[in-house]
Length: 255
Image (cartoon, rainbow, N blue to C red; front, side, top):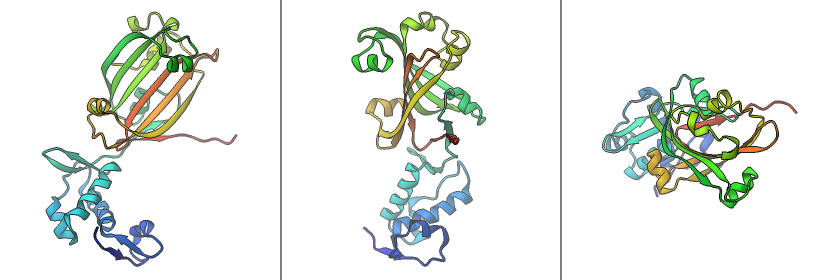
């Protein structure tokens, strides 16, 4: 580990990350300097080489690598194997509401897309059955799709629906389109409410391969159960999103 540096209060944006004793690791100073470099370069531009950054900031390769690594994890930079490191665009914003993935992205002027992995009917295991208030072994419709944003892979969504409630779903559903739009417009489903939980996880090797991301990259996992006007659950959704590409927003109103 490299020795720490001391910074005075006048050194602006660095200050927020400085402990009370005023000393920070060299890599963090490099990280803050890189934020200025990123702002100057603009989205899509290539970051200077590791050697150039070492010379520019007079630090070791280890300090540069750690600074760049953290900015990649935060979604400020993106690496392309064999090509280098590039300035990433702003994160996509998905509302925490009963709004489909399709609608959420189109509100931002981004074209959503999906690549189908699984489209099947299968028996519910005990855990899924409990969440959907059906019997273990009852049939559910399972839809698994890679989520795209302007053709970029950003997540993986796995949806289970009570088959008995939607016997014609697979006949009318376009896997490349919005499932919510199909349920609402073609099957007359009313989304009365839902319960959603959000946490950070690491992707499994299979999930990382499907999404095209590093297994060590933190992911955002959204788990939702939705119900209709009768209060009966009809779907469970497990959505895994790249933490470097998506963020979530929620509106809070007074009680």
